[in-house]
Amino acid sequence: MDTIKRKKTRPVQVGGLTIGGNAPVVIQSMTNTKTNDLEATLEQIHELAEAGCELVRLAVPDKEAAGSFEVLARESPVPLIADIHFDVRLALEVLEKGASKIRINPGNIGGRSKLSELARKAEELEVPIRIGVNAGSLEKRLMLKHGGASSSALVESALGYLKTFEELGFSRLVVSLKASDVYTTICAYRLFSENKSYPLHLGITGAGPMRSGLIKGAIGIGTLLAEGIGDTIRVSLTANPVEEVRAARQILQSLGMKRYGPELISCPTCGRCSVDLVSMVNEAEKVLQGYKVPVKVAVMGCAVNGPGEAREADLGISAGKKHGILFSHGKVIRTVALDQLLKALKEELDLLAAQIRKQEEGQ
Image (tube, rainbow, N blue to C red; front, side, top):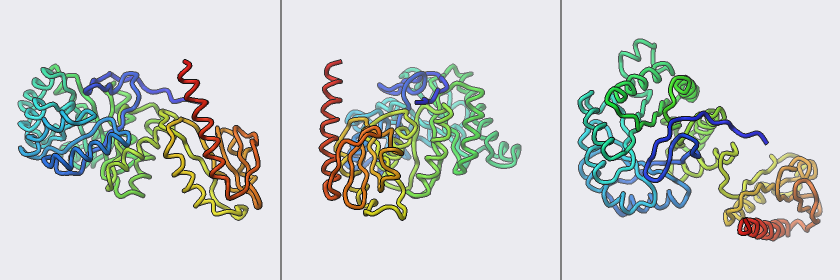
């Protein structure tokens, strides 16, 4: 099986996590609660962590939000990132209150003197900063020079801010170069990765609601990850942020970069299918949610798309006109009545899970 060869970047510590270097890609998301609402924000942080989020970003627009950060950082099961705009004093306050990382757009933070103040405090506390370059807030001079928010404009903006931080002696940096246009974003990250080795945060900004946002995120983030580019990701969606985490996990699992549990594969429906395959797949998906074993499970609708085309599956079922079959790696295990297919799948999955656990315990 082919595997992705990732481009090596500088490692940066964020709390107990490493972003970059040889570390696995880190999943992050952002709360949509009012940060000063401690109960609601902590509840959402825990929901995100339970879904598999490894870093959570919080908006810090004012003193009230900053004042909540100490409790949130202390109670959070994962490191927290403070998202700061316009007022460097907020960044300095949350640094003292336990922020594991600061995200800024350097263009709106107040000039070199403010960046210098932030860099000194962040270095003192060994906290990294993400330089978040966004197509929607590029410097006017770069927009004029490049004829708009092009990939080259995004990269020139990032390189300029990097130079400022490097001159200040600060190198605990992560970079993002986001646009709502997918191809512009892809080109910007490609161009930047040819010039610098800072770890990269991938994402498509303003991607939109669930359907279109998932497609844009999967194409943009997935393309770059497949090329070995990217160290941490956020799938931005106008939806419950837990959905961002689920999407990110699916992207990583689809590329073979991480395994979180069973991967479900199924065939598209066609005229050969003699069962309600959509319902069967939906039910199978519910069954698989209770398992953590990293196996590939197939649910197929006919003999054509059965054991042969799903040969890579560790376990699978295929429905025929009168009965179904249970198979593993292309070999039929047994024939099963149609109404017993899902039950048989679960029985075999239990056996397989027990076998895998036994093997792991013996290592």
